Amino acid sequence: MLLLAPFIAPARMHIPDGFLSVAVSIGLWVLSAIAIAYALRRVSGDLDERKVPLMGVLAAAIFAGQMLNFAVAGGTSGHLMGAAIATILLGPWAAILVMTSVVGVQALIFQDGGLLALGGNIFNMGVIGVFVSYFVYRTLLRVLGERAVSVHVSGFAAAWSSIVVAALAVALQLALSGTSPANIAIPAMALVHAVIGLGEGLITLGALAFVHATRRDLLQLGQAQPRGGRLVWAGGLILALALVVLSPLASSHPDGLEWVAEQQGFLEAAQGPTYEIIPDYVLPGVSDEALATILAGVVGVVIVFAVAVSIAYTRRRRASTAS
Amino acid sequence: MHIHFLDPYRPRASLIHRLDPRVKLVLTLAFIFTVSLLPFGAWPIYVLLLAASLSIIVASELGVMYVLKRAALAFPFVLAAAPLMFTMSGPALMTIPIGSTVIAISAAGFERFLSIAFKSWISVQLAIVLAASTPFPELLIAMRAIKLPRLLVAIFSLMWRYLFVLADETLRLMRARAARSGEAAGAKAGGSIAWRARVTGGMAGSLFIRSFERGDRIYAAMAARGYDGEIRALPLPPIDLSAKLTLGGGLIILAGVLGLALLVWP
Image (cartoon, rainbow over all chains, first blue to last red; front, side, top):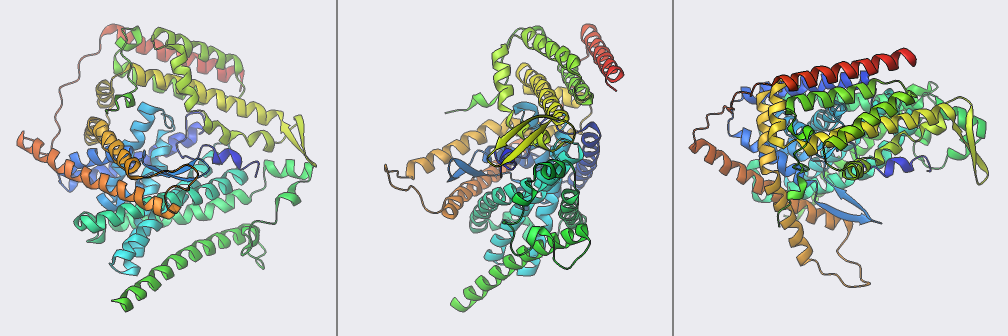
């Protein structure tokens, strides 16, 4: 728990300069640039001139909306990152541009995240956040059907998973850069952001419920698939799977921590109590440890989805019997 | 209530303020790039660059304390690198007994942690000087000059223009929530966390709907003034000779420092 503490204090994802190695920063810049260039082509290809001022104003609204917070407990508060709500309101391509502007202004003007690290921050919050939100929202909405409840559930799940997957990406990038050991950074970031993601999910749900009740026409994603939507869907699926699979693989690799742990003998003390259903994230009966860790991660994701879907179905049935 | 305090620009008549924004942006990026290329533990070079950044802060007349205070705000992330101290292998620098266990701090890990913190600290100082000495419209010119896509720059400029309006809108929403929320000493305020989150979500939702409607009105106003989907801008002003010399000189110095560091600390 002592080693988790550092990740709770800066409960945010903006990586400052100096934390990513040059190779990782440049790689992420290239990936972001490709995504932005493609999004620009899509948006200007749609020739929807009305969208340009709208994107500017919504970027400002997301920036300002991040000030909205609510007290959770003990001085902490939940607030909004906004990738999911931007994706749902604007479609994936415009959302990438909006999130790029938000993250860019945060870095350039308010030093929230570094300038060289900006490529990474755009990739995590803009590209991953948007792709994963789109994939989750779209899939759940298809499964659950077009109803108010399913819009709420899908919005919540999209927001939560966008935060958690982006946090995994941050941890992985820090580990790749050699600034934070993988076996501490990844579980810590995942754990902390699984909780922070609940705040994001709840606010997104509230906002969606409000928009759904007053201006249903704005929820574009409920209607026809945008152009290039299949690409985003597949991208979201691949990014989510890759990060969920890669993270336990990276953190199961024994590195520095083991040395200290073995030397001081607190390995036994640190292990054991927390995970009960899937002990230590490793499935019993599978001999290869990395494979078992991956399987455990996949099973965990499937369980979360199953719970979300079944809650939605029961609520739907109750709603239809009531009416 | 208007929140102009969001804008970090602080007008002065300093040399740094007068420098061409394009040169300023490129030099800041080059400085940060150099700092992140420096090897771990190259302390003399770090101190040299700290001296450089402090003299730039002094030359900018922003006030050393102002910049350092803002730089401290960006500091908590440093804790993310803290576990390195305990996890890197190598000889132990010192051992801390906690209860029955003993935690060892490795020397190599400690040096790397300090290096990361220091590099991050000097980088953020220059980023603050850039933001505080350059009005945003000039940064937009610099963005155009380094060939960012026009549509993206257009979104940036519209975002900046309406940022303060929407921040005011948000503050109004929050004031309204505070006004309708009763509070009594000793009593638990508000409902469950889920209820509070839903209230906040409703506020976010109405913020977005108001923004959508504002976006429509802005589009109508732009269309009435002849907007045809193309954002036009004045041609970029020429860069004068002294700015060019500053750019060249700065880049050469940074390259020299980097070369020296890589030579001495392979």
